[in-house]
Amino acid sequence: MKVFDRFHVYLWNGRDNNCNSCLFAGVLPGGKHVLVDPGHFVTPAMGESALERLLAGIRRDGLDPSAIGLVILTHGHPDHVEGAVDLARLGAKVALHREDGELFRRMGGEADLYLQDGTLELDGEFRLDVLHSPGHSPGHITLYWPERKVLVAGDCVFYRSTGRTDFPGGDAGQLRRSIERMAALDVEELLCGHPYGHSGFIRGREEVRENFRIILTYL
Amino acid sequence: MEEEGIKSALELAMERVSKLPELSAEEIAEQREKEYRPLGEAIGHRYLEGILAVGELAPEAGRHEGDSGRIVRRGLVGCLSGAIELEKPAAAERALAGLVALAGKGDDGAAASDWGRLLGEYEERRAALAEEQAAGARLRLAALGISGSAVVPVMERDEGYRTALAALRREFEPALERLRSRLRREAETAG
Ligand SMILES: [Zn+2]
Image (cartoon, rainbow over all chains, first blue to last red; front, side, top):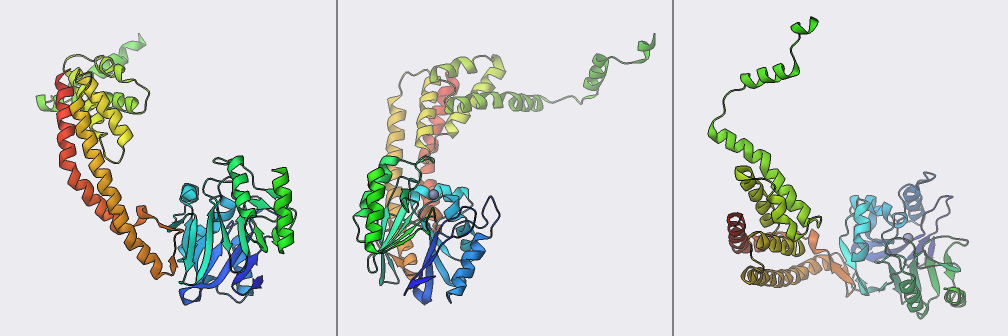
């Protein structure tokens, strides 16, 4: 689904667990795209063809999935990264934080570059801020597009709730600090990592603020 | 009795032995080496994994006497000296402490300082190399339209870095081997 120029979201609506994805269209040289969190190839419990559905959604938006030049992973958990292994075989570069590199390797993937806290410049003119946001996993990152006030939060925050911290490398204190940092940003579009109790795409500055307020009250 | 027609297991074994061709002294030595060296290497591995303490090395190796004892000790010393690698400094330092103990020296300051100097020089050169090669890797990513302060090249996968690192290791190898062979000599003869 095209949200506005250059920004597309793909909200998971299957019955099994899988993540939400998004795409920054035409931001790489040659009009290539950046895909964030491709999710499962096939969901583990019910065998839903998750990657195929995502690629079909991208095609419906009039975009060519073979033009995905870069896949960014918010973190290394299988329900976010599995499809990246297949996309890398088709020629896409894969980026994630070094501290989640080992998780990705265990899925059979290899990062082409690591991302750390700082600015990611694409084709010299498109800018994303990368925030290292540990807590759910040690190498979790979130992406902020200041121009359109978009925050891709991965598994740090969901609608009225937060990501788990009981996985290896999880840390509740770190997650709180990561969320506080996100809450201080000016966000109008918040894409959460999963559609838990809600599509996971929270729109409007007030709605986003309210979500952070409720989460931080109970965290 | 029926058993008269049946050969005992002992008789069968004796027959088999008598059919074996006679071994030359060299072949016997080779067989003993094959038999006892792995015992020494196993002691070395158990020590490097932290199962044995440094003080247990000599008594463990000393459980075998004579020629076989010497082979076991050689296996142990070979295993430990082989673990002195610049890429794995923690294991190397443990191996070094083991070899010094086997040589009967409470503390070999010279070996430790030679090792420390080699490791320091190597790490400094490797860091400079990574920095130098990272600049090239950043340029290659920039050519794909990917740049900025968030970007960190994966040097482990960079062909140029890997080739340069292999050359750096080759450069340090002679000095490292001199240290290994000195420690080996002292630890083997002290037994
Ligand atoms: Zn996760």
